[in-house]
Amino acid sequence: MEKLVVLSGAGISAESGIKTFRDMGGLWEEYDIMEVASPEGWARNSELVQKFYNDRRKQLLDCKPNRAHLLLVELEKFYDVEVVTQNVDDLHERAGSSKVLHLHGELRKAQSTHDPSLVYDIDGWEIKKSDRCEKGYPLRPNVVWFGEPVYAMEPAMDIVSKSGILVVIGTSLNVYPAASLVDFVPDNCLVYLIDPNEVMYYGRKKVNFVKEKAGKGTGILFEQLIGQKPPF
Image (cartoon, rainbow, N blue to C red; front, top):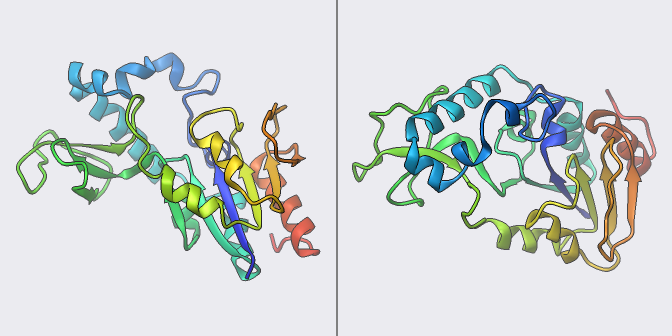
């Protein structure tokens, strides 16, 4: 089967009700981003950081995958679909996607503050102050913060380099390092970008723009690729 790689960003999760940092009226107004998403912020006030991510986790449990997530699962009947997501939610997995790589970590997991390789599933929504890793150190969110390395970039580049079709959903191609992934697709790869906003892309690849929100745009993409209307 031909490999179809999806690069997804905040725009796909927004339709499920997930707030994003960059939304007007969203989290930018509630928190200083560097206070809740940086090693320095954690060092200054770990309780604030834990509360922030506990609240995000609680919100996530009330959200459901949307049409875009579900249609990507439907495309697995026709393509070898692999999702590379900038999002830390688990909506792709809950929709049923079989191959998902998280660039920036996973909200529903915790990691040791001493050894980042020690990662644990979170039962429910809360990391408590008393929670410890097996070596006795406190737990922190399993999320890549500003200033931290994106360890998943190398496997992501490998996935993208094997794609026959690349579909970018809900991310602008202007936020690095994730935006650089487009440069690794083969020369004959078809590239689609689904986003309701005007996106300025300055790379060398030809991009087919679908100027719609994630759900509607993925439906249009499905019809273009499969030659039939999507099942829902």
